[in-house]
Amino acid sequence: MNRKWTRAICTVLTSALVFTGPAVEGTTFSGYINSGLEKVYAKTKKQKDAEKKKSQAEQNLKDKKNEINGLKDQQQTTADDIKNKSAKLDEILAAQKKLQTDITSKQAEIEQNQKDLAAAQEKQQEQYDAMKKRIQFMYENSAEDNIWTAIIESNGITDMLNRIEYVSDVYDSDRALMDSYQAAVEQVKEIGTKLDNDMNELTAMQDDYEKQQADVEAAIVALENQKEQYASQIAQAQQQADNYQNIITAQGKIIQEQEAAAAAAAQAAAARANSSSYDGGGAGKGGSIAGDYASGGGKNPGASTGVSGSSVVSYAMQFVGNPYVWAGNSLTNGVDCSGFVHEVYAHFGISTPRYSQAFKSVGQAVSFDNIQPGDVVVYPGHVAIYAGGGVIVEAQSTKAGITANRNVQCHTILAIRRLV
Image 1 (cartoon, rainbow, N blue to C red):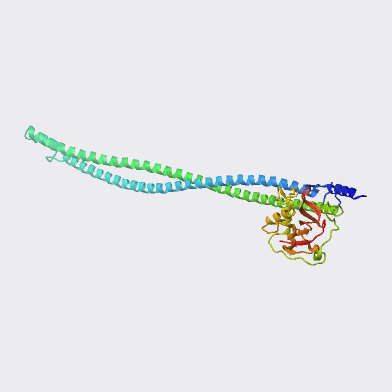
Image 2: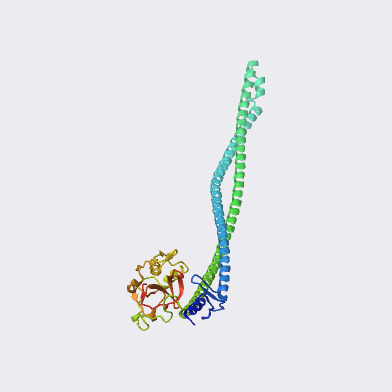
């Protein structure tokens, strides 16, 4: 078979590869397509179940949060009602305090009125007794004060009238005094009646306030119990929401693990396919490893920054499928091989050269057997980032663009450098 047919067959195998790598738990891959721009692989049953559980938990969490917000609104409304009822109770208690003062004052007025009434009645009785004695004296004795004596023994009409007038004056004076004392007694009685009516009104108000107080206190107790029930319901709902969030987190982790496992398996399959095919520009799996970068060199430096190699690879993989532009500096609109590595590391604040061969002297040397994701791999006239699983992520060529499908030994390796 000639070189032309070999190249064509390799291209077909690279473009449409039936997955033969290690199976991901719970699934059978229907196929794997790698065009240099996209990768499509079937989801595992476990991943589908996880996505279903995660979606249901997210909906449940949303519903539960709405329920919690509703309960909190009701709890706040109840708290406002308690506040209003408490203010009303304070008003009732203040009114009762003032009413008690009024009742005490009114009771003192009633007691004083009773004393005044007793004194007025006593004066009235004294005047009545005195008047009776004078009348009895005048009518029962033959003194000159006796009206009949005054008439019979008078020395003429003038003397008689004078005597009668005197007796009449005594009577009128007694009568006037009796009327005044009677009026005083009646006035005191009227005041007493008014005071009694006032006291009855105050007592009725006191009964009404006591009933209002009892009603408000009972309402506050009921509202406090309702508030506690809302607090209990909110706590239970929050616990359920936390459980849903834990489910979302756990299922999300399963989904990520399944996606990562599927991607790694697919990349491994592509790497195996590429290692046995012609890459269109350099050595295949048989590419050599220069000098002390070969297996057994023992170089495996520790981390020198807070950035992980997996973070570098994850960021770089976002741009797979974007175009290759010679001397370009845009990971989105176009970049060449050294520009790709340069821009990816610049994202993490790590300064690098802009010429592929200059990468042979940056960072720290790594032996091939210790290569890790994120390490920079330098080839003759080319540079890439090791993505793990035996493949590199790179700005490959104008035709291929940015890819993550070639085997790390697609060309002779001149250097492996660790920058993180």
